[in-house]
Image (cartoon, rainbow, N blue to C red; front, side):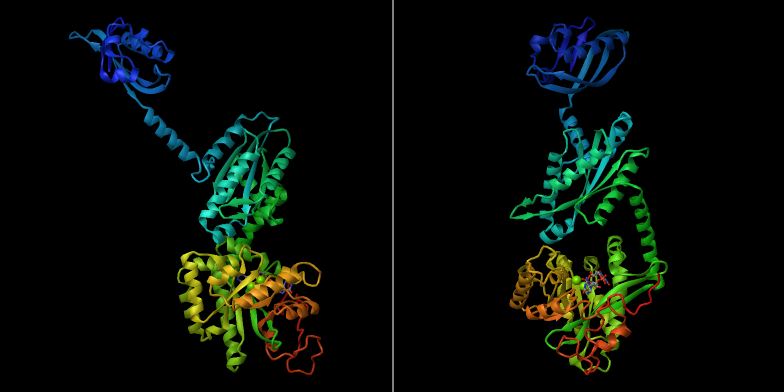
Length: 568
Ligand code: C2E
Ligand code: MG
Ligand code: MG
């Protein structure tokens, strides 16, 4: 608290003023206030106070004061005239409070509101603000572009190696991106594994493409997480400012990013007419898929799996198909990914499970225990996040009256390695019911076979890419051999997927696989068409098998003929 007379001479200088201004009371009293602080901030304050006296008004505001030691201290100050008993001004009192802490807090809050806590990068709010600003400011010849980045298969790292590893990876990706852009470019994290880059002052759209290409390349170098190296790739959507608003630019870049994913990931795509059309198609497809579920347009086909020890088919894999009213029969690959993204996979999977179990029950009737047909059903990671999964499978089995040993559940490596409590509990629960557990597409994900030891699986399905490579003098034979040997050591059975030729069948047999599945044995078929194959088949695979009962093996080398109606 400091007071002066009307001439500006200091009449009061309290203890806090001594500390705040770094001047003892004795030195201040009687001096001209404008002389006390030589620094500009001090004189500003003094002027305000003098003005305040002249105007006989109260003044309030924030000021910066430079302390003798050089520090600039933000102050909140009020100045008011001192009036005598007749109401005439005789001086001026000023109260100033040091607001350094409040200022710091405000800055922190502002930082929090505009930055991502994990990576420290600007967040969506900040990005939107800067984008809007760039579009408003940009001179017409300068091009503004937005890059929308999404890591490919980040979920594999996150689910497989744990969230701490996932977080560490995101931080490193953020740092690498920041290091790879020009100094003025804004790198933001929108959330999850999505990042954006704002590029301003470009001379042409080609420059935006060059930047995106560089980022795609930068991210291909491995990331050294504590204890292990991880590789990730990125898909980038590019949108260059046209006449749309800022929200539009971000949305367009997002759409283009989906294009990059669709085209095979680890690449960029530029927003254009095609991308927009396809985004609209996706939306349409989602609506149609909802209707397909409700209106019963889905079908289940069954692909035989041959037991290589007996050459009998006592197992089939249930695969979903969609009899689309306009587009004809759609394979799983055309709509299962969309169903997984939208969550529609949950009702879809339930339907497939019930349908396949019902079919297995029909095959169970009249067959001796040793000839029962097992049905393998694909479960998505999403299913394992549904509460009560084990209970619902158990009640379905008892409702239908199906021997649990006739059901196998195919899961991805990701699910098998997920250490989330619910997932491991669900896997153990299914196992306890007597349901078989199969790891599908083995070898394409992140797991080593030994890490599967802690999951209660029975069978490993060797991915078709390895089978496809057999006999071509590459590593695939060694890989299949190693997987079979390891699986044996762990007490697991193996199935070779995607067997398309007699030579491949011979090779997987020679390499010690227990089962084989693929177009050479038979493609996916309707229940009615698969039925005649579900009997003992001859041992030889030379096709000379007419004299055996039900022996149509190799049954349907023609994969397209599922027995379902095909529309064009
Ligand atoms: P998957 O479980 O690995 O199924 C094998 C896929 O390979 C099937 O494709 C099958 O038709 C195809 N295939 C079979 N034999 C051969 C062969 O010899 N050569 C080649 N190149 N391919 C062969 P489909 O039916 O299109 O299914 C694709 C994927 O979609 C499946 O891969 C599975 O992951 C998923 N899927 C299928 N049905 C369902 C379902 O009901 N629920 C869930 N969650 N996913 C499903
Ligand atoms: Mg499968
Ligand atoms: Mg598979």
